[in-house]
Length: 362
Image (cartoon, rainbow, N blue to C red; front, side):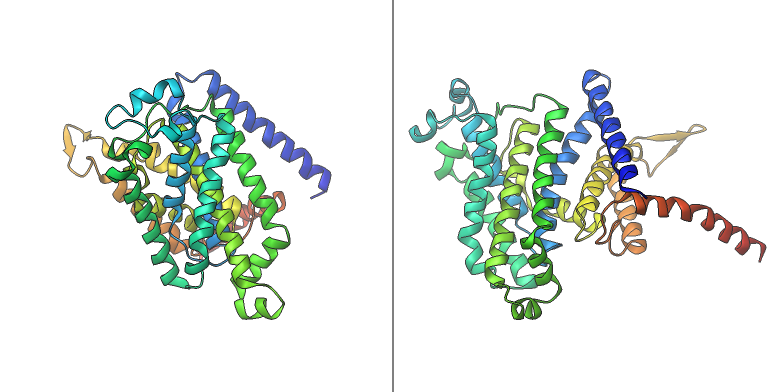
């Protein structure tokens, strides 16, 4: 396909996508559920790509994403909640005078959340990045739980509001803003992956000994990947706080990390577009498409016993098993979306039907 054709198709696709977003936003009352799914999917896409940067492109198995999201979310919320609203938020234990009057504009507060998460990553990165494989995963998972315990501890009541959580967090002004912030974050990570640093990350993933022999400083590049991944996880946490408008320590349980890891695996370890596609598919499946199975079903006056609350997650788990069995490297593998690839897939469809007909005749 010619380059000009690809550009035209890309412009048309972006224009159509923006048109859908504007339509949904202008009809928010009728399409509230769809807007919620898209916003949540966009937030998860940012965190999934940040996790893929570390796990898929650098080959480091980290499970600390929820902890860095918590740091980013709480830092953002503490700095972004309007000063006038803070007495009603910290009504139980009061607020620390150091942060009582500290308020930043929302964009700066989000960046601050990412920077604080990156700072924590820099502090713990030096000792734990010397670990490998399962040991690194256990260490980062432990760090995530330590952060959650500290946030909920009584000693932090005047800062994090302890078990009461934080409320009255400024929300997004619209669906377009969520998509724009997510697009900027993902675009920056894509530029990084395609840079010299990104090529070094991939070399470490493929073979650490060969990468070191080529002059790549393993520890420095691992730390860089870890810090950058944590920064965008912190931004993702800030976005989640804006989406939810209220957070507490239970928002960032281990299950959140597993959800993000699930998206990365389903999309493909080492594929940015795979993480984006999987975030929308997984979120939409869990939040809406499969809710049919949680509702009682009656056919010809007979109540089907299996259709009740909880069946949705059973069906979701079965579908995940099917996807993993048939797409062992994920939906995209290590590939990225391209118009040429889409055309090849479309051209294969008729051949599949022809092959099926021949098998039926035989």
